[in-house]
Length: 263
Image (cartoon, rainbow, N blue to C red):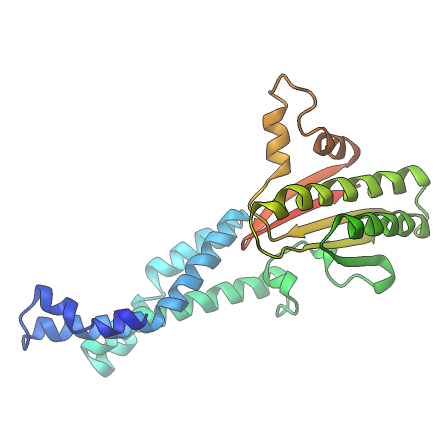
């Protein structure tokens, strides 16, 4: 953005003679727009994120709002007051309105003002507002911590009246998927990675959410691809998890891998 502001006089001069009205208008817009580039990029990120999560109502409404209202209405209001500068300011004002539109949609989706980061990320309600005794959370950075957490998951299931077979399946699912992230995801670069685990008990079942900041990896997609392979041993651990779980879903959320396992 600093570079853009530094060249506000240079770029208009490439196309228009200094001192002309066209040069003045061009310099005005080159001065104003860079100030709102962070907001514009944030709006683009939100729109892309919600499209990826298949919020089709939002995507359609946002396109209509952006195309008809977010810039046109500010232009109609500001132009009579500030002339040409009002037209230029209509663009960044529209970016801000797009951002507010996304926030309003989030409020409508949850039927209240978002109170947590999970709600802002539109994560399933099943992971929000769970009583302390019905949830288990942990950050994992090693295989040893994975084994410890798997044992806690086993006990968590038993403490909620689930049988030992169910508890063993939950333990195996967590240990297999988290170990896979540590052994293959942590080693892709030199960053300090972490796997965030959250288990909840709801409606007589346990749901595991495994979230990591490693490179993109969709185990559900990988298994579907490997099912067409002639080698039955490839990704055998992930295949085992898919068979034991009632449902396994994957999402890529703002650079994070989020795997949800419903047992």
